[in-house]
Image 1 (tube, rainbow, N blue to C red):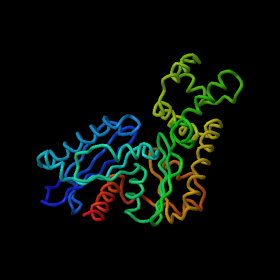
Image 2 (image 1 turned 45 degrees about the horizontal axis):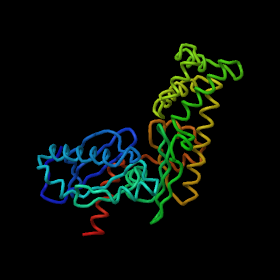
Image 3 (image 1 turned 30 degrees about the vertical axis):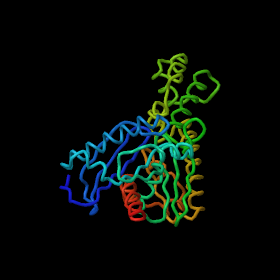
Image 4 (image 1 turned 60 degrees about the horizontal axis):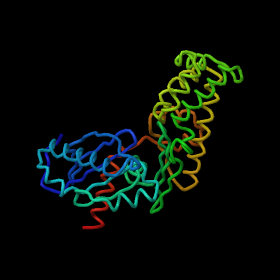
Length: 296
């Protein structure tokens, strides 16, 4: 890491459902420290996530050879999973924090800022879940990302869950059987009861682990896998088209299966696809700097 200068400090926070990443930088953009902690989804409780963020911030100060009381001089930009819910955003803004200033947005908003370096554009994050985000001028549009239970149709978790559903149907001879369904059934020792036990406690990430199996089968021409992947592709295409209709000039696909989905998109969408200029931490730091400039 670079040595710190005696100037303003900025902390970017990418608080996802799986882990929380933070990055400390100075006014020149030099990276002074980085750290990773546990989940920072606001639905897990604000005391927990602020403890994770504070501990991570202290670690970055240690890396920068700064005393921990310097946390009070940090201007923080926090992109947190769960802030698409207004109730969560209001609670977070009212919660005490140790920073000189703090500005809060969704993790998708910060990822979009970072991907397009603060310029107009849109992203679709396709990993365990899905979330679309566009920023056009002063307007923003968030789409999908309402959680595994009722949304995330094109996500890795949904792909995995659909694979298990189709596997069980095939096992009971009321659905199409394929090499993929037989492979997944073997994973559960050919026991529907074992599948039920799995489903009783499974989280989205647990279902998402089967998405690689589905993609591998898709690459081999498996009919059941093709149905599942093409259904997910269609769901993600509709999100991308809505982001374009909002006025986004460019699109970036991100997340664990983002590039696999990008390759399946029709030509007119692929023409709008660009690689990410930066990540969500870059976006969070940019957000913190803009907030600091607007509130000197």
